[in-house]
Image 1: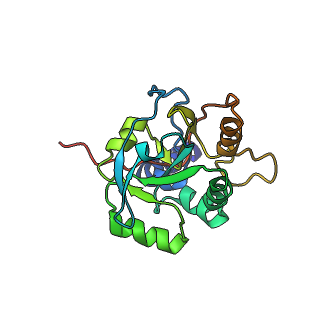
Image 2: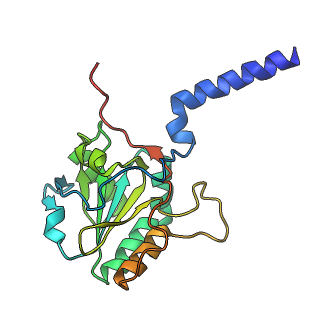
Length: 207
């Protein structure tokens, strides 16, 4: 009888995870996702209606941050100021920071509201048809990409090694490490990690 109760409880847990898992657990993509070394160019519109082209920043180091205002992992990092601090610190070194929202059920108005609420100083680009996310192989929000001055992807993966947000010490910010190496003209020691966060909400496939 006890065994049956345990099995039943496990079934309920699995059902809940299946329905709400994107809110409750890290979505980790494969560390070796096949992708082009050279960063695909794109043209997107930001939350203010401005057209932004990746090629406009030729010769600069660029950070791409996949975001989703509904994602608890993203909310945690914005509450902690993770992205804002990095963007501000490295802007002084000429680094361009771009957030990309691929969430299919959002739009520019929602991106603008999110940017205003969080006082985001950098562009939030709308990729709501998912084309750019798929071109980069973005798996989660957040999912980070560092593009060097030659237009190559120098780093892709998680923002740090603290998926749960509960580490008291030993937190490694992979993006900062990559940026420091790229700016110093050195190889990136950790060029790829598993991303964590909510799965990117691409448009549903047509049935």
